[in-house]
Amino acid sequence: MRTMHKTFILLCPLFAVLGLLSLAITGGAQTASWQPYSNASDGFRVLFPSDPEVSKNSVPVDADSYELRSYVATVGSTALYVGVCDYGAKGALADPEAVLKGARDGAVQHTNAHMLSEKPITLDTNKGVEFVAENDKLHFTVRMYMAGGVLYQTMVISPLGESFPEAARFMDSFAILARNQSASAALPAANWKPYRYAADGFSVSFPSVPKAEKQSIPTDSGAVSLQTYQSDDTGGTLIAAVCDYGPGAKDKDPDALLDSAKSGAVTNIKGHLTSEKKITLGANHGLAFEADSDNAHISARVYLVGTTLYQLIVASPIAVNSANSARFLESFQLIDHGPQ
Image (cartoon, rainbow, N blue to C red; front, side):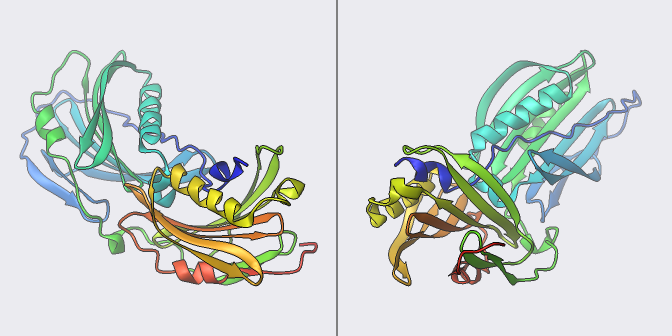
């Protein structure tokens, strides 16, 4: 059965849409006074020639939306830009190269530009991309980085045919810092309570009303339905999922199926297993494990009840502890099936 590899980490591809500037280019010269600028909650430092203007915009990504925070300073007819978009645990678990590709494609499309050059880069251990693009009016020099679920974007934007002699000074000064999570925008106040899903045969506690989603998953025995419930908590994303494999799983070794689920989860985040142990839920076999990738940490419990696989996942950026991980994982209970 190849199902476990595809059913455990429940992420849609993230395609970052870059909220580029609507530039009002002015030809008046300005006196630049370069000073270091840092933001503790967004976790970066950079040199700006003047105090940047700060703005916030909502950015749609698939069915969700995220806040893009922009920092802009101008020198004459050139704009210097830093953008920060935090995708949280979803971003931390996503393939950074895929997110960067989506951000790059979105930026070029959003500005009706064409690519002149690009190359992969790194900043510390964080993957990035650098590219140069132009449209019929503007020239863009861009660097983007993914760090712990956060997309950082730096840009120098000038009128076509004009060069900015201190572009490298600005771009090279950018540094990613440890983020002050207490200074970040707070999630709505948690209201933990149990949610019962009688049709799926379980209950579990969430800090807010979970988002429900159903999808079809291909398996060696045919397509099966995967039902997920997801809620965000400070420091992490909480996911409960249920999938009934039907008669095709009836004669399978429960421990082998659970081990396959574990292996699929670790492979999906391109990570490595840090701990595991066998557990039970009544007479049912289960497995608890943790895994790390470069950017993400997952704590998980999986149980096989008859032919139904139950999955509980806490996903968080690698440097962030989810304080309510145990609360969520230990709240899971089996209940009698029936109409919801």
